[in-house]
Image (cartoon, rainbow, N blue to C red; front, side, top):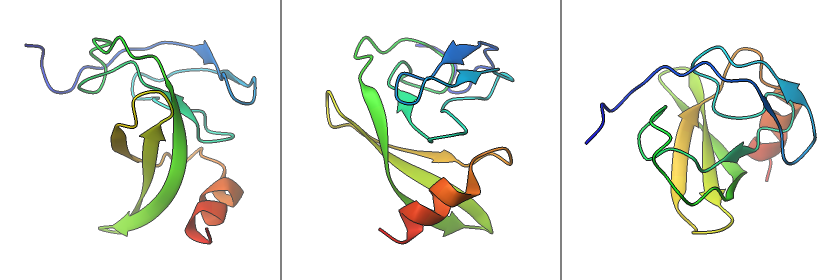
Length: 98
């Protein structure tokens, strides 16, 4: 079994909005539209073979930080990840109001 958290610096093109995203080793979703891809079992391990798109379905506040909730469109697995400072605040607010 892999470590629970692995830093993996990877750039990617968002499959939802087409934005070119420059990874910092902790980047796991598009900062523009907030969508992600189901590639990890534990953050950074790249051990999931699902590869479904992760739809942002909500946001919650925990210890003063925004936590984005996701559901995989392919396997329906639910995820929660911390929002990043560079994330689109309008997209986060939209999730709060849904």
